[in-house]
Length: 309
Image (cartoon, rainbow, N blue to C red; front, side, top):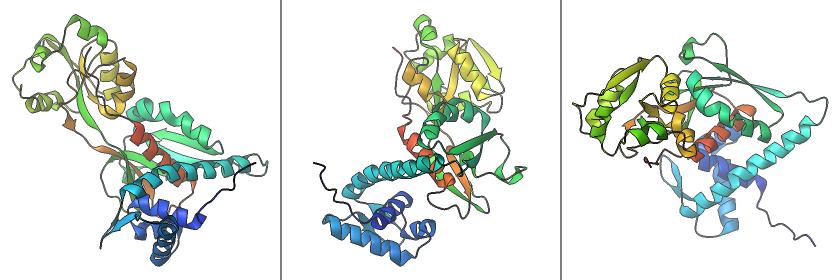
């Protein structure tokens, strides 16, 4: 016998999820196209239904989740995504319902090393959404055509766009395990025995890291310079030297053992990755579903913490 499900009102759940994700009743109201009072009322209804402790700490400018609210949010968000995906898959089985097209513009290296390896998961969740990916490094206000989602560094502000942070980034040295087996990197001073791999667009990156590591006067055995991060990372994978790796772009390689981070506790800050979407994008739209998915993937992307073997 199937047990009867005890569920809270769906509107209250949606209001709570939006307010928790956006940390704002006002922004949740805008996303769901209701009033601020309606969000507050629905959240209060859910809190009354669940009983103490409450789900939010309320202040004048923002709301923050209590531990109980955080635990509920971490369960409810994916559940709502599954419901939305099930509805879309059902609609996709109807021959008269075309696939929604989502136009995404992203940085080329980021697309190759982070977005594309994960994109199949989004397609599996939302088979009725066709993602059309274009890569470029142009500023948002210089793009020749309109896109539903533009992925760039940030935080930046662009008129007519809302930004959503989904992936933080730092920079630190990485190299192949084969190289480090031949020339150990037990101390920062050991870099003097190695070839350092540079990127021409950031010529001071190694210098800044060495200063941060307290060894500004180290002179490497050799240097090689490339015009793109993905080339320097590939050179590191091939054992040509030690590269300064953006954590978002080398995290998968470190996790798989293809690269090692000999000094994981010494890193430089970098611009984070943001999804910029045109103002007025609605909750539940392909744009919102893609941005929600980016945030979940970003949360699961662990910063490299593996030191050399």
